Length: 304
Image (cartoon, rainbow, N blue to C red; front, side):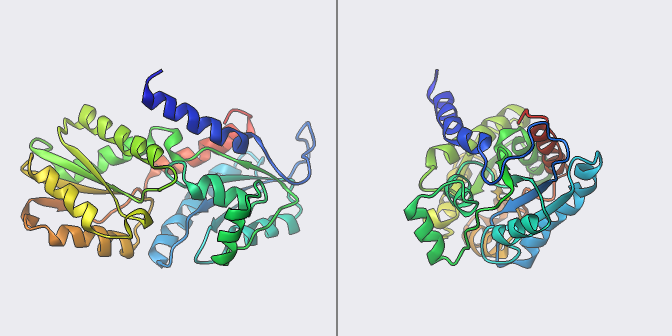
């Protein structure tokens, strides 16, 4: 087994107990009469535009998820910064008598948020350090009565690769002599997994779009929200190619990232005329909406 496959296998082993486990009261074994809800969980942001893009996902998938009658409600929760929080929505499910809630984390890949924070908020883990950090950030913990099932994250499918391919081609047009800069949030605790994520996307772009040069940069807490890593990645690409297409590998558009960090790096580039940048994000994406519907169906059928 090569190193990349080994990393994926280890990540899967970490995630497996969360995907299979649950908390709260048991659901009837035959599933008959069980009242099941779906909670779409995202990071949260101070930006209304960012939050609206995530709520739009709920609006786009609600009817399809509830069409066959097995799901009684679909809600959205923000992990931090704003309401409705995870705890608020899970309490609402409990008050409405739900037996089970399928939680779909709209996160790119494994991270401290997806593997530590969210399970702790939901009472599925009880790491004192994580609990103390969440308390310091004034994030409420809530152990629901309903059984909770966590689904895989967005990198579980090929949708991120297809999304970045489409956006690269739309931004760069003719991809010959164009390199790509992928800018993602990053995570100190799961750096290998994030490097695997952007590395896989880069290889896909090389294969499908004929992109010869791909660089990546982090823009989150790991680099103190600095534009410098993005600027360095742009310069690296421009040393080898005529143009650089800068693509945020971020779920939604938040001016604090697309403008103040990534956009600032583009503005600082002395070769700005050779840089292509749209300030966009993964959303909106019909493929992501389809994936949400499918992962809920697979979870209901016991195949996720």
